Image 1: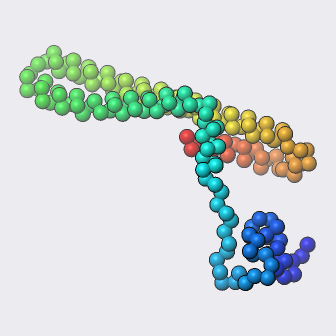
Image 2 (image 1 turned 90 degrees about the vertical axis):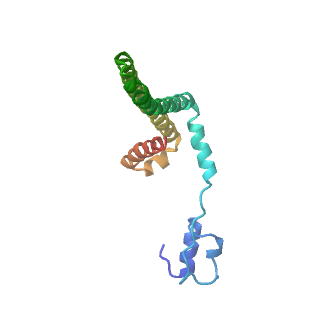
Image 3 (image 1 turned 180 degrees about the horizontal axis):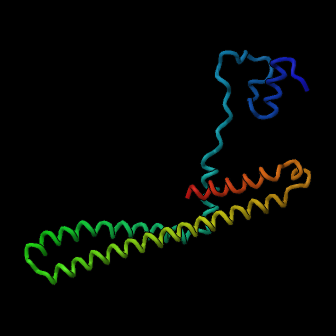
Amino acid sequence: KHMTSRRQFREFLASRGIFGAKAVGTGPSLRGKATPQLPKPPRKKYILRYLRLLQNLKGLILLIVFLGLLSMALSATMPWASKYIIDTVFPGNNLKLLVVSCFVLFAIGIMQSSISLFQDYMNQRMMGKFITSTKRRLMKHLQQLPLERLQELKVGGVVTRIQADSAGMAGLL
C-alpha cells in the first residue's frame, strides 16, 4: 500500500509500534524535533530472567568464585614469603632455611598455576553447559512454533541467531 500523506505514514508507524499514540492523528508536526524513542525495555526483568537461567549452574559458579579467591590468597603470600626470605633467611646465612623457603615459594607457584588451570577448565565447562541448555531451549521453542511461522523464517538466519545469541549470553558469564 502506498502512503500519500504524513498522517498515513505516522499511523502506519504507530501500528507497528514505532511511534506512540501521540504521533498519530493531527498533532503538531514532527519536523525539526527529535524522533520519538521506543520505550526502554525493563532491565530488571531481563536480569532476573538471566539469573533464572543460571540457577542450575549455581554450584559451578560458586566453585569458580572460590577458586578465584583461593588463587588471590596464594598471590598475596608471595610478597610475604619474599619479605621473610630477605629479612630473616639472608641475614642469618641459614642455607637449610633458604632451601625450605625456596621450596615453599616453588610449591605456592605450582599450586597457583594448578588452581588457575582448574578454574579455567571449570569456567569453560560451565559456559559449555550454559550454551547447550540455551540452544536446547531455543530448539524446543522453534519446534513448538506453528508451521506457517517456520516457513517465513530463513533457515540460515535462524541457525546463525541461535549460535550467536547463545554464545553472547555465555559471554556475559
